[in-house]
Length: 113
Length: 110
Image (cartoon, rainbow over all chains, first blue to last red; front, side):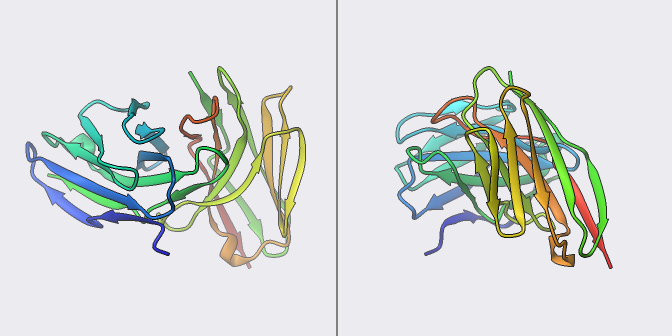
């Protein structure tokens, strides 16, 4: 059981480049989330999807777009990367009905130069 | 909006007991959770409180007082492997995303 899988694990981008971070879960969860983690800032919510076909903005959505491709997959896109988007990105999922535990991927370490 | 406050750092020695406090402000409330993160790895779930009182899971316990918008994580019989960051998190309502505090770095020394 793989849980939540994120790709890539590491990425270096130049300012202005675009890229998509991929996330897939195999636990049949309804809800999926994208967070970013910066030193001293904790985990800040970028976007979330409560169910297939729906997405909502979180605390820090500017500069990002998301796609809930199907129940398993939730991707995060940076259209024009900026140095301020240098961060560690975590995808997570949870069973909406249980509403207790979120499962996290191993993270994507992104550097924008 | 929603916000959570927790201490940034706590230090303790092996075998001791440590308490990490969390106060929150939310427009609604659907439970307080605690997560552990080692060295920037994936956060992992520790506990969840929806109702007032103490929940115990082995060496770890979590407490909630909804009237005080306050909770804490209690770690007993500390071990070196407990050195990690600990985050409290809340949901404003069912089906919405977890909002996290900034985390508390626990350092356990021998």
